[in-house]
Amino acid sequence: MAVYTDITDAELAGFLADYDVGAPLSFKGVAEGVENSNFMVETDRGRYFLTVYERRVNATDLPFFLGLMQWLAAHGYPTAAPIPDRDGAILKSIRDKPAALVAFLPGLSTRRPTVAHCREAGEGLGWLHQAATGFAMRRVNTLGQTAWASYFAPLSAEADALKPGLATTIKADIALLQSGWPDDLPQGVVHADFFPDNVFFIDGRFAGAIDFYFAAWDMLAYDVAVAVNAWCFEADGSFNLTSARAFLDGYGRRRTLSAAERAALPILAHGAALRFFLTRLHDWRATPPGSLVRPKDPLEYERKLAVHRAGLPGFGT
Amino acid sequence: MAVYTDITDAELAGFLADYDVGAPLSFKGVAEGVENSNFMVETDRGRYFLTVYERRVNATDLPFFLGLMQWLAAHGYPTAAPIPDRDGAILKSIRDKPAALVAFLPGLSTRRPTVAHCREAGEGLGWLHQAATGFAMRRVNTLGQTAWASYFAPLSAEADALKPGLATTIKADIALLQSGWPDDLPQGVVHADFFPDNVFFIDGRFAGAIDFYFAAWDMLAYDVAVAVNAWCFEADGSFNLTSARAFLDGYGRRRTLSAAERAALPILAHGAALRFFLTRLHDWRATPPGSLVRPKDPLEYERKLAVHRAGLPGFGT
Image (cartoon, rainbow over all chains, first blue to last red; front, side, top):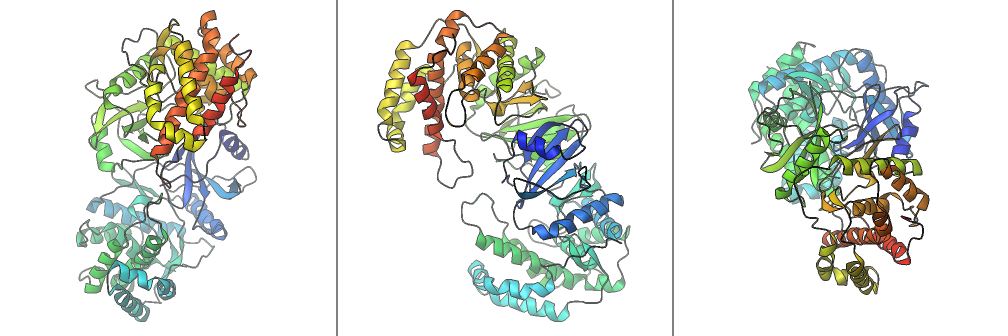
């Protein structure tokens, strides 16, 4: 959580002058997002979020991310719709950094998802896949399966430092996933980071999803697997099969998973756990001690990997 | 800017259940305040700020601070009114830390005050002094003139480290202020931290003041002096007499400064500069390098002290 870019009242007024959104009434930096600076802006016309893109997000990907958010909002999906300026532009800049104004999306994220939350979240993801159908832009999933071996190569010593012998285990995961990875499942736009902190609820019902800055083109069932890893494990590392089935049940209200997709879920979830383990391992190494942002523990995902290595009877079937 | 206390959706719901404010619709940590954690809470009834008191603020002072905010709001002064729970309590706790729910106050603070801002801010401070009249609670200004000598004693080596010979200069300031400090000026409740980041504007007009966590009982003209130091110096360290006169002019719309108060302003402003120099020097020393919160530069206030040592012809007269 951080605000990296400091914006003065005068700069804000200059930025908003390009938009037809009224005059600012309040402006607060929000302690949310580690890659971007986020601000809540209230005007006499409504409430907005101003995001300044700081790091990790590749500026050339922003038209895809913002275009997707605009498409989803236009197709009735509850998300933070980008606000066009008077010339129709949705990608702007402030302090020489890329920036966008988006609609404020109400809702609360949950820290400890219940089975009921998982069912609602599953429906939210199925709805997303349904609503994104027809979006014409493409973005390769740069953190997809084909990238894992080369992503891990420079991190193998770090893995062993975390837990002796782990590098060998991870290499075996990568080989196993490479040989068994499906290539014939339905593809589409995936959120790729559909974690509890990116999903909002109101009164226990799904109220919207945000943070599309990992979205890409990949297998839709892989997106389900990423989300199940994030939503359906208990704090002690155990897999909650009831939550996972509720998630799939909710998903099915909006989009039907084929038999082949369901059968592939265990290997997809194994791969999804590896993907988050790898980036957390990378961030763990890259973050100096005492830094502003505390990296997430890679071992949380190594524990999930261990569960997937042992197999998940009953998941997906 | 920081959020030290992490509050889950379940904890928030439990906290709000004591209040008659409706159910939460959104909840965001705000990157504001170095002593407290602040959250914006929206419910179906309105918008609120939840403050969790972390450090520096002495818990035994909170009834004074919150009582003052409540008094001011009840007397029509635009500030963040504490919201009583169903039993009438305004000081509550969350995660075993003191906490309060206050009304959301719209407005934007300014980073570069113009002469017009100074006039409006002056009126806001005069209005505050007027509105606080009759508030019965008392709090000693623990950072007032009588505290400076003992506050500085352990910091003298640090002053010399900042600038060789500075300790001797500061000791001379303290002695001079002690002998010349007025003791017969009107007293009352002072904000004591009426800086630009604590004052809100809408459309260029004063819209309210927040952050009463240094408020105390002291000379009202001392509060004016603190504010003039904060509002009427240029970034290059020069004193803007036009801004200062505008501030006093605005103040005079709400409360008349006596001739004795005006005559005392130069020495009060000298003392006010010393008070902020001292706490900044303390925080500078106390903050480890690379810390989350970057301390404010004490030399900014040493430059203001130098201006006051040279005298301010025309200020207050």
